[in-house]
Structure formats: structure tokens, C-alpha cells
Image (cartoon, rainbow, N blue to C red):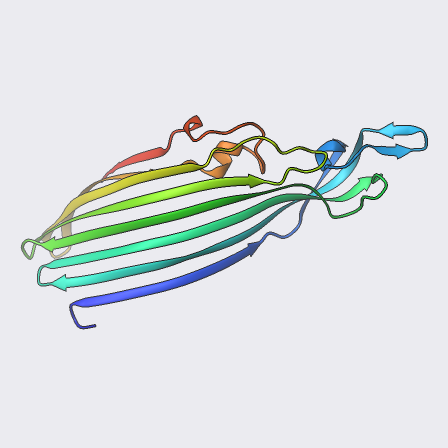
Length: 226
């Protein structure tokens, strides 16, 4: 707008589709592949050698807005970030020896979706006290949520419950910079950064193997001194 005030806004969307990553399992149970046991003549096979593919499909979109204000010795930066992230996790059976009657390549063993939303805002102030001394401080307020939804297949029942989760964090930082000489300066800062556990921390797999609650794992926290 002028030499003192700048506003920036950006909207984004990212689509991710993981390539087929295949693994061969020997003696893989049919029920884990969401298929009935296979019949070979009068014999029933409960497991088979299978080639499976772990798949991942993601949608990530959001908006970032930031503003910069400069008034003499004071520089103020503010912003907000809104993000919505969706990831489908599923497994396809590419080969089985043999497939049960009526089933073939592309059979989906399981399918679940993780929804993670985030909203954060920050403000950072830098003040030049003297030509040699500058002090600064910033604060980030961040809210993150996670929701898990699984398709309950006909044979392999994905019935484990994952609690809807929400976290709120305040991440502060402050510090100073002092110029001793044109090429020599001193710097010091103290900050706290906190974040939620990851999906893998909770599930330990591409699907929920047990019931999961938010309180099962504590958030991470890092105190940084420089």
C-alpha cells in the first residue's frame, strides 16, 4: 500500500497420489485382505502368497495471509494460516495364488481417511532501541485437529475407534541482538515450540490396530536457548 504497510495473501492446493509400492507376503491370511478363504478342489486355503500395494492419496489446501508494518524503529509482522488436509490410506491386492472365486487384482483390503485441520496466527515485533541494540519477540497461537474415518469392510472388520482430537499451543520467543563492531555482534534468544504427535505415533500403521485416545501420547515440547 505504501512504504510502511504491506499485505500479502496466498491460497494453495496440493494433490498427492503415491505410486504403487508393492510388497510380497508369504502366507498372508485371506481375511486380512478382505477376501473369503479360497477353495481348491475340496480343500480350503486360509492364506496365500500375495503381492500387495500400499496406497496413499492426499488433498491439501489452505490460505496464508500476512501483513508487515514499519513505523520508524518498530517493525511489526502479523499473519494467519488456515489449512485443511485429507489423506486416504488403503491397500490393494495385486496378486494372490490363488484368488477366491469372484475376486481379482485391485481388491481393496482396507480403506481409511485421516482429516487434519490447522489454524494458526502469529505476531512478531522488532524494535531498534539504538543503532547497536535490537530487541524482538513473537508469539504463535496454533490450533490443530485430527479425525479418523475407516470403512468397515465385509470380511476384515475395521472397527477400532479413534477419538477425535484437538490441540491448542502457544509458542513464544524473545531475544536481542547487539552490535559490538561492524563485523562482530552478539545474539541471544529464548523460545518454546510445541506440537501434536503424528498420525504414525498413534496408529503405528496405515490403520488403527487398537482403540486410540488423544491422551495416549503427550504433545512434544522443545525449549530452545541460543
